[in-house]
Length: 174
Length: 289
Image (cartoon, rainbow over all chains, first blue to last red; front, side, top):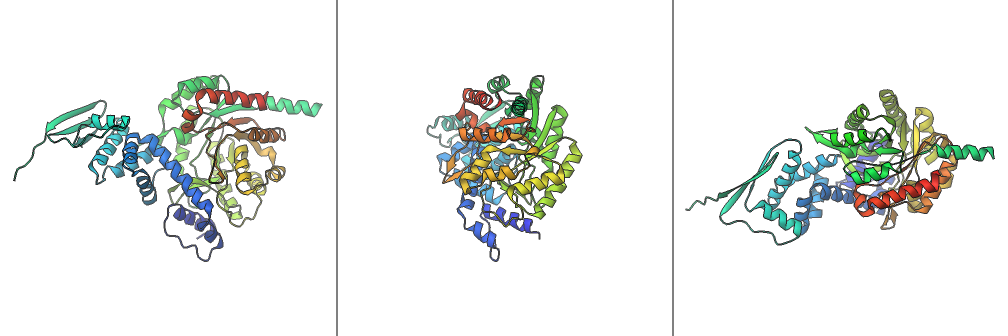
């Protein structure tokens, strides 16, 4: 491997907090322990946060509200391979959260992804366990988040127009 | 006296440019009253269709509407001309699209690596000043110049990490790249100030060694310091010291054609449109009048 390849691959690993064997290379040893590397990581993190916050406003608000924003960003950027293009990067971030174990986060991320996809003429359907309007209003205004609706589910269709259908939840009695 | 007149005439020929990435009619109207040219960063006006980046049609229409009064240059962020493995060919696709719609005076990129093994670093890494880097860059600049037949400039980036062993000085590296490839240079006065602040870079020594005849464009910007580092995040108006440095470069060579005030789209709300316009007027008054 060329010297340039070794250097660039090592810096990539260090920036992403991945294992990197710097032993035997004075320069890699130097940067692995440098305050400059910490700063570079910080800059990269700052950019990512800024870009995600700009592109995924509601998901960011929800993550921040629950103290999970930084962790979600760090995990996405360290484990995945985000696109250098802001919009595609945002899509990737929302897709990842669209499979999250937290139902509310999953619903918000899928809806926000649907709004991006709608700009390109694609339709998205998202099932909600509470009224999405109330969730987005609560995020926007910083007010209390509505809890799960005890009686209804909401089917949101995002396309050329937004349509939300409320359905009485069917509960199976044992 | 004659030399002074020649220098003055050259200053008058320098165009004032600034960043514009669309979506702000108020900003567009304001800057069109003040500047001569627009710097377009293709990466920042890209959307993705089917997983591939494409330039936003609405922003291209904005540029077309400005074309009777404005000149344009493209300034890329994401080509990653210095990646050991490959550059980002999607960027060239964006440049192709841009050139189909907008007449560019020239195009440029950062002398840096932003992706490694296809992974985005989230920042720019300066190139090690070695023969290996030079060979790689020369070959890629040559391919770009063959592909576009349009002047191509490279801009030095700030250096945040400690340097690996170098075979050239900073200026010597750029001079050799210019000599071998025929590319031009952008000198970013604010980047030089960042390097001076962060690790005591000898700016005067650099400028006195640099082949200033290759410099076609000068960038100015303002940023902030954090944890003892001065960062190249273009979020503020320019400091007087940055303008003084830009003036020193401008008056040292007659080949500069453009002076560009750069700011991030994300900084527009905090800077404010009025302040951006006032800053452009200040720069014109200070350096180009």
